[in-house]
Image 1 (cartoon, rainbow, N blue to C red):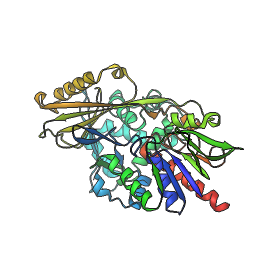
Image 2 (cartoon, rainbow, N blue to C red; image 1 turned 180 degrees about the vertical axis):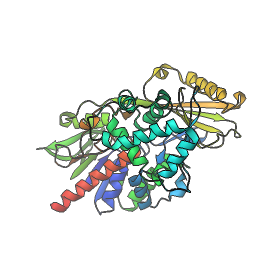
Image 3 (cartoon, one colour; image 1 turned 135 degrees about the vertical axis):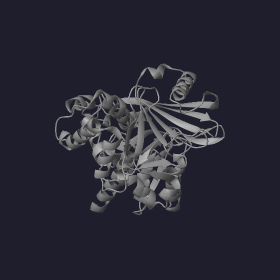
Image 4 (cartoon, rainbow, N blue to C red; image 1 turned 120 degrees about the vertical axis):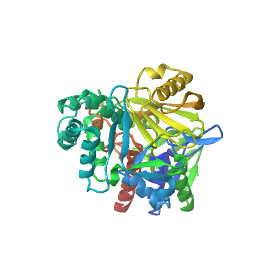
Length: 424
């Protein structure tokens, strides 16, 4: 039986791999000239960068398992670092989250939090983590409402929870879902290794997309790039195939739509029964400094400034992430570059004369908004049409829009197809 997968992002790739390893026939179709979706390679100044700076963590168990299964060595693709992040703010002392390997988890994190940040911060963090599991069982509320209810200080809200919420959910704390945020916190800190940072050593397009492409071809799967799907053929409530933009009809027994939610909604047409998705942007700014420019650690958090998270990509290249809505969206690219450079100079991270060049990447619809009760609005893997399945990060799971969520949903669609085929 043949499955057509529309979309070559991480979700579509995950579905293709899992189907092929079970002997299914797969044709993956991607409209872009390369695989990877929103985690793909971009060329700039004779170097390859990501279209948006991503960070994987040790809790991404299905993504890491998938990479292992297709022959990728984690150590070749990522630098795994124990939890050790410092977040700066113009008016507060640096806030540091780390642990020591000399004590069992989570005692090591608790002790270090107390030592580095003081007893009040330790009490507030402990209280929130203790209440997270309980909060998941109550009605969903905005993260900010939950933080205030649990007596989080203004400092912790502004310096920790706001940047962390934007980083994980791309949604402001005033409207973000506490249920999803609590899931992120609980899973991240469940085990010591889950809290590890996996800093990419290579552009992300050279990780899962490259390895999955080779695996698909080795297993006899078909990949079509730069081919856009115009519509899905449905007869008597059964998916029969797809029609390409050049009016080519491709037949299939099953179809997985693993595209961005706006494209999925267009292809589904009247069969899309969920509310209109809401989106928020992410801006990634690359600042190229002289090669001797180096941060004190690979990842630095910022709060109270335009920049939110700064990654040291080596050789003087810094990648700065600006998530969510805000007035910064009205700024020109040059204005963003100048403002970030000024912030770094004021924070003594760089010297004024070291800046060589800058580059701005804007993803206007980077992720869906993880608003309160969004889980009830997210569509499920099995659509109302027989043989038509949905993947991509917006499809229902316990997490916001992440690479892990995309992989989970791709594998879920593949598993559902194989389960139904077995029953038949």
